[in-house]
Image (tube, rainbow over all chains, first blue to last red; front, side, top):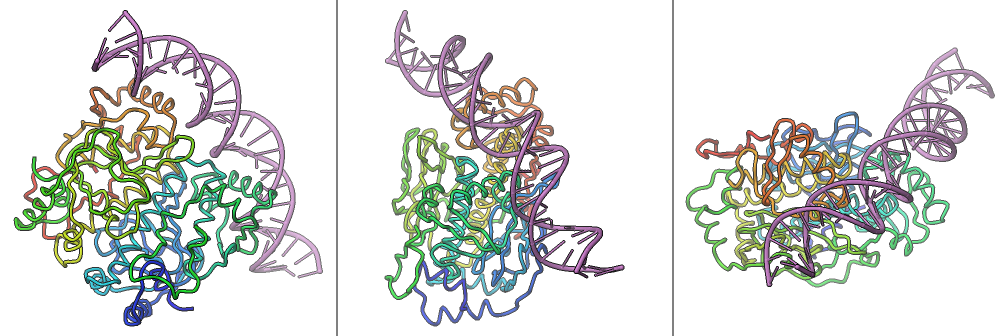
Length: 253
Length: 253
DNA sequence: CGTCGGATTGAAGATACTCAACATGAGTGG
DNA sequence: CCACTCATGTTGAGTATCTTCAATCCGACG
């Protein structure tokens, strides 16, 4: 299956075999399995290593009073949980495993080395961080300026593209093993309302969601409803030419 | 008045005189004045330098269809607009001047050098970037899990702390030269509703907003309404001891 | 003195919420 | 194999928050 992080970074930069090897070695080290709903990193603790999601699905979230909880980002294979970990004093939010999730524990020293070299890899990791921020900004737009329907469509479409980037999704279908309640926590709505919107999308023939897998039935219309403009994912590679990577996700933007 | 960026970074790390000098030199180079409402950086263009806000107030925003616009972050003196600038291909949002704003144009090469050294400064800049992300996440929580009143209070309180960090605010008052319409764009509400909430806060004796200056009249209650927990701003310094900096913003957390 | 951007107020309406009931389906134990 | 439970999904009815549209007010500034 290859290293998802490598695959992701190669959407942006061209990596040499040496660099690829180095990433693989980094990711292959100590891995740990987390059960569904387990807390991977807890708020207010100091993370002692940087975590890389290898498989499964995790989420950045904050537990609020009255049992509410806000999911701020979903983390899929190839995502680094926590570059913050080695630079900040404490986590300001939790990271939880949505499904069973495998994470690689990268030693702080290794990451630090990666981040301070003037290499392609450094640049790639910076790209990754900046893109994560851009995704956060898009979530703000979701909440501030899009209604429930647009918001849900936008999140789903974004996940499609992100899964595409790491080679998991085809052009209109991807695994998304979350409950409607989690989707509600992520979109800032109630589960009831999420349910109604999904129901609408289904009866309109736009979406199928079965066996933990989302299938977008009418991709162009879906994209339009979502007002999706993939610019913010920064998948246009500029450094070291392009080509060679057969399947890129650019066509979904 | 000193360099706001230096001041900000020193909330987190202790800088040597040499390092301070280096920052000052960086910031003092080419400066440009932007008039109110002028676009500082435009979406889809490649930024050719990194911008540092020297004075004034700017905002990251995205123009949406139907004249709507979403403000994702306010930028105050000492904030770097755009570390993205040198790593990504294109801006995925606009940066606009809210009031007359002075920005320093930092050469890409200079910043790159700063970011790839294994120095305290590098670490400090990483901290700055990570904290910016944390602020974005907090905005997501605002929109997803707080009602209008909490949302407005939270944003205002956060601005108080941030202005405090750069030495502009006292313990309960700071300059905030924005219209209610802008606040609406930032909180994802209508100007009308913003107006009503502010009006409530005023009649309850919690807030004064006059001459472009916000004064929080009952700080503890205001903080409580905002459900403010400053953990996410990561103002607890750990590296190279503490002390010496007379006025820190920790007491507001 | 008139104009213009911004603030304020009112009334009607929509989107999304709350509460609550009920359905479904997987898993468990008798 | 059925009864039971538990988590999740579905549906209905009433309600609240926030929006929309519109009118009016206010102060700065030509």
